[in-house]
Image 1 (cartoon, rainbow, N blue to C red):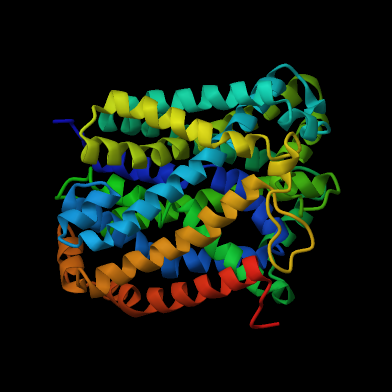
Image 2 (cartoon, rainbow, N blue to C red):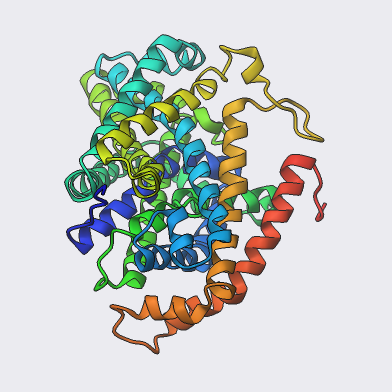
Amino acid sequence: MASRGAFNSRIGFILAAAGSAVGLGNIWKFPFEVGEGGGAIFLVMYLAFCFILCFPVMVTEIAIGRKTQKNPVGAFNALGFSKWNFVGKMGILCGVLILSFYNVVAGWAFGYFLEMVSGNFGIGANFGGYINDIGRVGLYGALFMFATAWIVSKGISGGIERAAKFLMPTLVGMILLLVAYALTLPNAMNGISFYLVPDFSEVNLGVVGSALGQAFFSLSLGMGALITYGSYVSKQDNIVQSAAFITLADVGIAFIAGLMMFPFVFSQGLEPQGGPGLIFVTLPGIFETFGGSMGIIIGSAFFLLLSFAALTSTVSLLEVPVAYVVDELKIERKHAVWVVALVIFLIGVPSMIANGDSQFFTSFITYIGAAAPTDFMTFVGDVANDTLLPLGGFLIVMFAAYVWKKENLNEEMEIGFPNKNSLVLKYIDFAVSYLCPVVLGCLFILTVLNKYFGISLFG
């Protein structure tokens, strides 16, 4: 029978799960979402969603995983509710879709690291040409997927846990050094003001939906990643406390990534609404202004950091379908990893060519009421990130509260938790039973209507 493996330590689990949460979502996606979402008001909503809604969902996912010691599909079967395993299947599909385009962006980042090392600061001005050099970015993406698969193939303790113990502290240290430098730049405080002083006139349904989607994306919720990681956790661990540490780590790194990014942007008089290319287009030119070897060192460090961040997340995204194949199909991990990685890389090819190389995938679909078509890569992100993740979270809490029953959830949460009457446990019980289903359900419906059909019920 195929071996599943387990985490050797609680800190290993926390770092691995935090690494799952901390990635391109925090350092690449979070700043441009903040920029397009009006600055500080997006940050406020993101923080609120992470702590009020996402934390209870995270505890629920980890609890289901630890209770069953199974992948997202096997978990529902093991609990005796096989009709609900569609939630796990949807989560695995979501993770596969996200990894398919995430790996493309990770390949861009790794390529930029190599370009910075060689002193090619002009790469930012030629970003469009760079991402349409399919041979080059395809090679970078393939190398990145290889590195991801190699780590996952080493198992839980020998691969994922060991990599997380190195990558996570290194990542934090690199971000803090760049923050310290960014705050010394001219006009840095204008960037800090945009980032930290809310403008409530910027609030609209699109911003709310994006903030919710970003919270679920950055915390790896709704796709079964934390059910999977929870299945490798010891019965003695305090999963509520672990979930709190994971949430704080994710939010903290996203927050300081913003402290790093917006001083860089405003120091050059650039607009923060740069979209997905914000980092790739603007930063190389900024690094060039630092001069010679200093620019090379800082630019290389930043994109190496971005690559590290991406790797911590691609590892967890790949582990979800791998765990399913190992558990359900009884295939040895080392074989399952390479087959699944190859399939996901191929699924990502349309995203790779959807930025101008292929007209079909560049103008893939036009949403109802939209002024312009949406490319395939953005479409996959909209479906997986803004749609399936919140839906997955909604279904998981509905299952936990009303099908599996919250008494069973509470029993699992209380294992390893010293205070059975804690206000934290009472809040999670309330949030899973009432708050999360209502808020997530309503926001999911409103977001779908707004994004795909151009219908806004609030004007």
